[in-house]
Image (cartoon, rainbow, N blue to C red; front, side):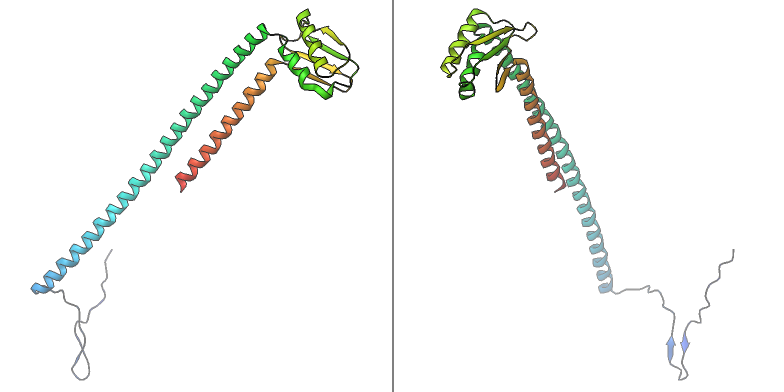
Length: 214
């Protein structure tokens, strides 16, 4: 396809013979001062371009470092959370074994402690019924002594409930009841501790996320 160029009249003279317009000619010769000025301008442009590239590289490096730092903090927090969880599990296992050993040696202790704590709750009751898996003579004697110390004037009826777990019991009177189950206690404690650990991990992750975005 043929390329058409605009016609150039070259130098244009006015009615008085003066030059009105003329094409711009490429300058082929420069004075030393002009050469120095051109060199200085080119150097400045090159320096500005290099500085801009360096600043871009620096910003990219800082962003990458921030990203690596966030990943490192996340891994560290995960490790800390895992160690805390393991420590809590170990503590619960130890506590459960200690409690089981204590129940073997002092099976009446939870019953007497509960009766002593009830105090005013049972001092006006006319009858107490204690249900447990094995109400032996030692447990019966300890329960009666503890009830009398708490202000209960009457007698306690004992009912054997073989289906109840070892160490578990229930005390019933006309206005209320109290119960204890070691397994339920440890399950509730385990759930509460896990919820606390999860909440701590959640708040820590939110804090780290805020630091990263900041």
